[in-house]
Amino acid sequence: MERASVKIMALLLCLSIGAIVVKAEDPYLFFEWNVTYGTIAPLGVPQQGILINGQLPGPRINCTSNNNIVVNVYNNLDEPLLLTWNGIQQRKNSWQDGTPGTMCPIMPGTNFTYHFQVKDQIGSFFYFPTTGLHRAAGGFGALDVHSRNLIPVPFDKPADEYNVFLGDWYNKGHKTLKKILDGGRTIGRPDGIHINGKSNKVGDKATEPLFTMEPGKTYRYRMCNVGMRTSVNVRIQGHAMKLVEMEGSHTVQNIYDSLDIHVGQCLSVLVTADQEPKDYYMVVSSRFLKQAISSVAILRYANGMGAASSELPAPPPNNTEGIAWSMNQFRSFRWNLTASAARPNPQGSYHYGKINITRTIKIVNSRSQVGSKLRFSLNGISHMDTDTPFKLVEFFGVPEKTFRYDLMADEPPSDLSKVTIAPNVKNATFRNFVEIIFENQEKTIQTYHLDGYSFFAVAIEPGKWSPEKRKNYNLVDAVSRHSIQVYPNSWAAVMTTLDNAGMWNLRSEMWERFYLGQQLYFSILSPSRSLRDEYNLPDNQPLCGIVKSMPMPAPYTP
Image (spheres, rainbow, N blue to C red):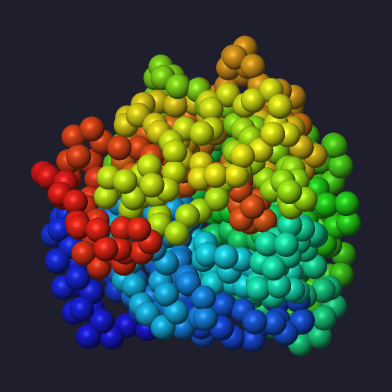
């Protein structure tokens, strides 16, 4: 919903925030969102869900590279709320990132206006709530960023674009799930799979189509796994999927019968309606669960005649062989070196493989009991948030009042059973080129996401990492993305340049693990405290905790 008064208010807000510096030619898009509870039933069981403007999925932000996005969020829940913009890099602007370590929450009955720019980005992203277990209740939606008109796109314009949100779902409400975790227990396996907030079985009567396609035309499906913990596989009866984009990068356009999408990940495929005009099932099934769960949705041909066949395309293997299958699929994903992304120059003009590594951080995840309660850790540190966001206490010059930097070492300890529960904030040097190794010694798959950046996913292999493994890295055309899966008893390596000053969350996208400590923050400060590197605290930013009554520090200077 847009209103003229909101547009004027937001524009005045934008002009008054000295931290926000934009070019006059960069357009503004304004949104007004009312976040409420509502009754939903993704698996047929009524429960309390989180709706935005009465919708699940929430409103789509459909924008173009470099647009300025202004979202006025009214929190009509009975709990504090934050929204994060998964994959949006928030250049120089971690103030808008929407994580508990960077922002005070929007309190019940109040509103906050987010203002950020999708600077030099294109691709398929989504937003969702980061507070409590709100992610288990919905509140998610699409954030699609298109290339500017003058930038060529490496495929013809599709007839239409469709957003598909996939993921596991729990019939227990978010407050019940939170109580379970606060009590030291696991929330266990999910109850089912949803597709855009609904679940269907083969043969269900009166099932409305998810989308409709006209014969002979090609459509872009932007798919995101917004679930809590489960990797999924997607396939469409009788139709191949051409992969064209993954988390903001154009990819080599390989053809797939099915695709694994891990928690927090997004990709785009082209699907051509080139079969007999009738209904077809899109099938989404779990990966790596002992007892598989699945759901279907109907894709309908316009004026088509005939129901979808009950014979579904077979899923990929789901055992040890299935992990090898999925790992090989990851290796088939390649950066399209000749395509332009947000800028005119080809993606491949950035030769990341020729940059010297200045720091290696090796991270091992672990599960343990601390005082008879379940916790998850990175290198023996199980993260906890504080009443005052880390970014604020750092900006006000009093970080020592709430946390200590670098409790977590760059190498895992020899004994991962010794766990410290504390804020996990690591210092990192501005503009360093770093290598991050994720090693998973557990029996369950992991997925990690890094706010503020994209990184090159250069390798995934079974076993344990050692420096000799670098000879197996893809140093030419690894996909630049913001998330990476790590298979059981395997490792993954990513590389990135820390050129975005701010406080940035590195987290498990498995929300039980995130909530119980499997995350950290990178503090990346510009030595010059200059507006060239980082924006000032916005004027409309709410203050909380220990900084609420403190005098404002000197702002950054040009």
